[in-house]
Image 1 (cartoon, one colour):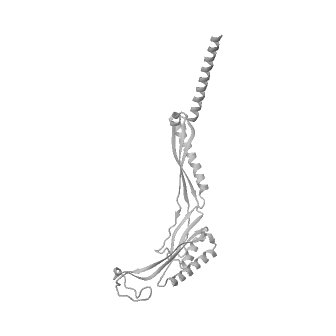
Image 2 (cartoon, rainbow, N blue to C red):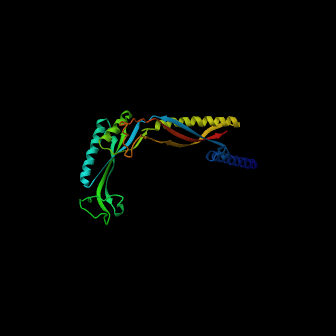
Length: 267
């Protein structure tokens, strides 16, 4: 009887040890899966592209004035800027779509080495005469520049707005660019296209190679979107050519790209 009890105890202990080892193995496999199955993968790179119609234009209008008295040229420049702002608002541009992006006052110098390439000014900024060429560098005037960053939401009137700003004193029209204000919807469409392409390519390779595709293990995404610069026939100041006083502005279309690297499991 005692021998039978010892035998039962030994078998019970062995069973418990085996069950414990089995539980540990199963738990280990869940936490640390077999890397051999993960290594059997297929990476696919695909691109989704969606054509988007721009709905936002952005342009910088600059006014530059020169003179000897800073207060005088600042006042004249301010009058022109205020006239342009009033014109833009009257044409429907919202207050929040107009902001001052630059305001600078810089002295103009005349140096001894400028002579004789540049004739000597009659006097300096204070109205005093000086020997020609001067002994030292002197201030002969000031240049003031004020720039407005303007958002355009009605492209049909864009050309008239630019021409109107130039008529009211704008000396430069810079960086006219078109963009999509909210590209997320196009990005979502491009991503869906890229996913479909990746699945199709993976299936073609699997059929050709005689294997099966499993689940998607990972996705890496790269997003590209380039606002389009608009170039019109212009002189160095950005003003339209005389033959075309009101430039026709066409935003065209722009492409939104999403590139995906999709990692598939191979069964």
